[in-house]
Image (cartoon, rainbow, N blue to C red; front, top):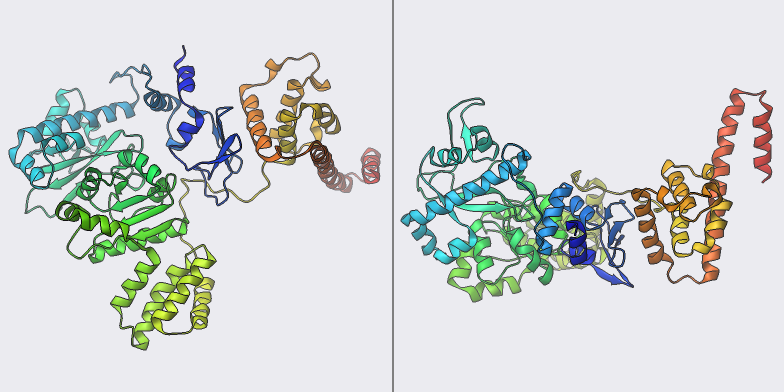
Length: 573
């Protein structure tokens, strides 16, 4: 059997999509907020019966393969491999260093480096003892894939070269460096460091983080540089291990360090991930948003940790997420708290404070709440945070709370908040996730096309009342031709269904899905009325466009009687 069909037989579309978004049952289908663009009202429909998932806002989706290609930004062979692994089906893919894609070469190189680092940890008693002293015994070291980079400039590079990899490939993987571009003196980037493997969202090893064992090294932590296959701002440490727990628990805990994340994973908090830097980026938060709307930040109590937490919270609030902050005592981190007092850490997580409450508390501690200047400083800090809240009820709740804290009137805070709104401009979002303008989608004719698929008795009426020339967009004209062939309309008498391309057939499936979702509760009388209203609106739209075109041409050709006659006839209709 074709592996594609075998995978389709084993994996339902709802099972695959459910790993990326939160779905709600809607009749025979499921609905969710689209993972491809920002929206407040769910327009992403998942149909187990048809094996399709599609967004009628941004028009993205398809079967399980098309969905994974889009959501993971991978090629079809990569999507086939991902789904094959999920289904437990081996997809034959030959790895040949000379003929494979460069990406496979680099990822294979990184896997080889991981084996090298693991072997070095097993051979280095000091590095292994360091991890054991931090609560990571041999079994856990192996389970987490931890490794060690020896204190050498060339040991890794030589080991990789003996495996057939070139210096340029080692550089491209981010595992080596050179003083100047083109310099033949290539040296190991990581030296005398505990090595943490970093995986992408699919669980592929793409990079490393290294923690120095030297007291004299000013760089305590060192990460792989950005490469073609590793983008720090789009990757979360431990995400490949945490995403299932995040979805099941409807909650994500975000910490700062590698050890913080690993200890949480090992000690009963599998929904934990770590940023690969300081503040989370918008891409990282959008990745988490696919799985939950509830984020708990646990950043260090030092100034840099608090600043990073505030920036991350700002982005998350702007994206409409529920954000809380886990309050950690000064001088501690999640790793230490879990190792020394696990019950204390559990209490911190359970008592996480909503982000705005946390910011109000922090501001009141930093300023003299009894002085006028202190009150002004607190209000100037907190009001922009309240302003970012999308929900008016939340805004009013926190304004009331702030007025009580400052012992000032609610009205004065409202006045000041309006001033912030007038001057506030939200940060520009990135272009990686498309935005969709509010528009009536599908179009009127697409509505009719969908209605035909579930009520074929109207096909002759619709395709006779509307001509292909009545339609404005080429896409709609192609759809008209496909419908004519599908329902053996007079335009295509004698032609068979085979004249419809796979793309057009899938488009009709999408529109059938839309019609089922939106017209299932309509009576036959309501359907008839809808068909008449839509066809009449399409004809009127065409008439308006044609009259405008004729007026333009008549102005240029005043003696053209044919134009004048058509214009008069259209006006009389």
